[in-house]
Image (cartoon, rainbow, N blue to C red; front, side, top):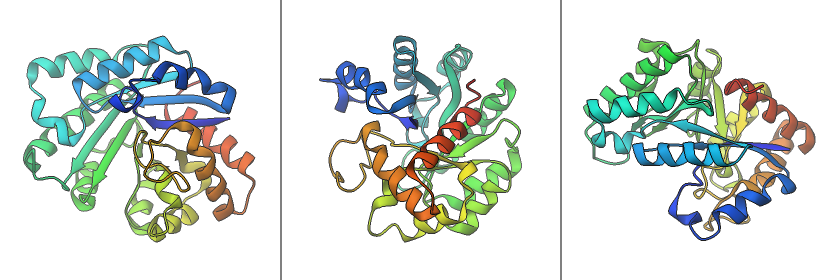
Length: 255
């Protein structure tokens, strides 16, 4: 069975067949899914999905690109969501410098704030970092969320940067990008990182692996990622799936 540690089934891309697709998962080898919030609304929707399906869990948080919507009033609402039974993480949170808005100062402010809340509640964090390697690491080193644990989602940096997080007990999230022809850096990270600190993820509906690149992604595509990761590690796909499943359970403190 496979654990999809990062999905967005609340997305509009699944509007027409969400229930049919999710209902087919366990029969097709997908044992568990964490649906991840990116805004106040998507966090609420993630929680609703988790409460509807036994095998779905929720993460709630505000993505850096959506931090412009945050204020004291709706942050209280977000914090209350974090206490719900099926919420297993705070995320996705972090920095995204690919876009010009919101400002970097606003992104940093709410990244730090959400990190603090996660530490107060002892929830693992799901970190989004795009074109912001140095600032993300600087904030992580300053705030030290290492005890609550977490994952660097959709890891896109160097082996040296991976080492910074792996040495502090964090997990590396690997998905469809691994199968891309130009993913040399990620393949090096996959080779370097201990299998015990890797989790599989889709980020669906985005980043479908080869041979379905460009199409809508779903957890059903994770077999392609597991197959290639197994090849890189020189082990069986079954072992890759088993260990990464156990890793996701440890990361999210799921018994």
